[in-house]
Image (cartoon, rainbow, N blue to C red; front, side):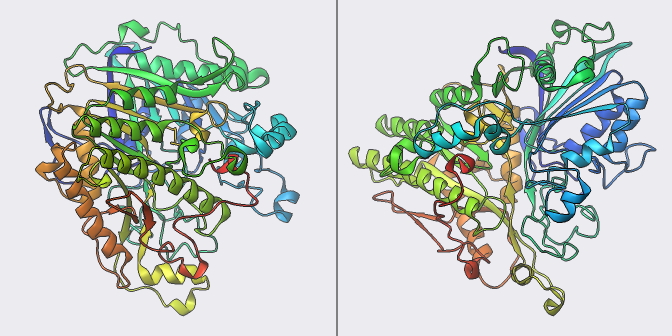
Length: 629
């Protein structure tokens, strides 16, 4: 249900340091002011008087929200210390975390089998549970129970054989929300607020638009250096930079996010913990209908989920696929342009070239890529302008040559290939001289920090020696966001893959909103908060703010974006380390302007030539497709 009279605020990255400002973004609402998610979250946790609810794929009790400046006399406490303090003050603090099946808190097993303490995904679930044991903070570790819809071919046999354990082993609870009460301005009455998006409260997420590789290792990232490549001496880096998007919502929509938590808690909490929910009928809270923003900048916002009745006490048993429905609906209603940032981009497998269900057996049939393709084709046939920009990581996390990484890269390649081939055929049918890249562009982010590496003879890991010499690293895009026509934005935890969209795989949550005072009219794009946030993202990625960026639906803007991306890719991929003027890079696919054929600009991912890590990827003979789609 759409909720009116709400407030919505966006965050790019976990932190924003005003000492390193971005190029200025001016809109009808004035100069856009970036905010720090971790600082705002710290403030609201300390201000909560009644309850704090957290859902997470990964929550680390030792995560520090503040690292550069103190906001009060507490100094720089950890998240765990903050939450324990609030519990001792009588605030109801509940954490609902994914219980990774491979993480085990057992000294003997941990000593014998590597990674069992932290789990395969290093989510810290057992560590966080142990941190809060014998405190007033309630922690529930919830596996992704349930059964999946019937799969085809051998995958169907595997799903049937694994049964409920298959869901526990293969899929996750992926929602990332914080819900709490906050001052309303009315004495004795607090309101409900919620944070929703892609940022986990765990190690490696603290980053700002600079996305440093080496420069912050001994300052804000000391003790919190994320590097998914194994065997690195983290003191020398490089760290893996992290780009992500989150939002804060207030008003009636925050109650919907709170109800999502309550439904999941009632389904997944065990024993006496089930009763540990704050009474929302308390007179201390403003009622849902009382917290209305009647300002002209108010938002209409709606919550969407991928979830089923195995994971939440839903009003009706079954599968909720409303995130997928929302994406498709707003792609279909788009008139001018679409801008996407996502950790993954793969789908519409039945449309892939040469696809055969029995041969390929790829359960990645959601329609988002083909819907984007058909939108572009419709605009081509109507001779109307339209641009679609898609930002994805250069590669998935982990070893570039690893089986999962290579499989995901291959599914992504097949998806992109399908889109460009269909767009090219439509252009040929219309006898157009335009290129498919005039309508559709794929981009990624990277950084280089020239400097003097340490004595490489002292570095044992050969892969780390390579990166210390090249002084480069991809910026990992973990965002899950789509902007349509600068008037609508959807953001949350859902990736563009089958895991996130199916509803019976990973559990997800998103919110989508628009400002009724700022909608596209007479072919003109609006200049409200959605437009300002997109421009701020582009300022971060390109390190510039050009007037052309205000017209993303024009071919000249797409051409300029690609020109910036091509230059940065050339600097990133060259042998000699050099500073990059911005982070935006054209994804290293090469698109034939006549046929739409897709080839790779390099056979192997940068710094992975020795390991034969193909940019195009390849299917895995050992990892089930259902895991990588």
